Image (cartoon, rainbow, N blue to C red):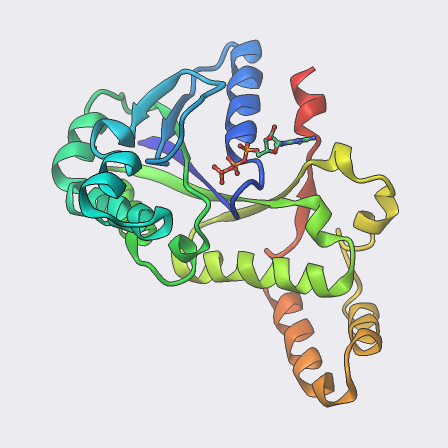
Length: 236
Ligand SMILES: Nc1nc2c(ncn2[C@@H]2O[C@H](COP(=O)(O)OP(=O)(O)OP(=O)(O)O)[C@@H](O)[C@H]2O)c(=O)[nH]1
């Protein structure tokens, strides 16, 4: 059985930096991992690229030839990947042995883990090829410094949990940029009742019922808790 991480999260949340830090960390430990670029728009890499979607299709070519914009072009590329799971991906995966560990650096378009089925089908394909897959969801810690941002971060992560149905780890990136660590600490293992009163204070009274449902939802999905990580520190 092979092992795989699907590294997902909003644009600029630190996915590639995480992959690069993980690569260096494993190298230091003498463990071998292979990082796969799944972003057809990516240009520079801080890690050796083991497999690259741009060998199959590149965003620049799609935009030029089909006259699509960056978002439409990205979705086109990912759907092209989906159509080529049985040939391109299967052939690439054949290069890896049973115990290999692959880390997929995904694009940041939120559609990919909200409603477009590409990543879900991609995961199904990996499972079919005998890979044990988990999702690593990156969220910029600066987007979690008050209750409304926290709820919105949780909802985006929850949408990935529901869409992919994978073992799921949330990571707060860019911790070195948080000036007051307490702002973030308050949301690492929050007390639901405390969150609710904070949310009610921030919002108009007509949202009380919705606020209660949201907090219950976040509380029930205990996977929606975040692990802070200072990737810059990891790399020093
Ligand atoms: N200070 C700081 N900057 C970081 C950290 N992680 C990432 N960055 C910076 O944030 C920017 C985006 O990081 P990336 O790793 O490219 O983010 P990404 O999620 O792969 O971006 P997309 O692929 O465009 O979605 C880069 O300028 C990184 O150097 C961190 O832990 N601390």
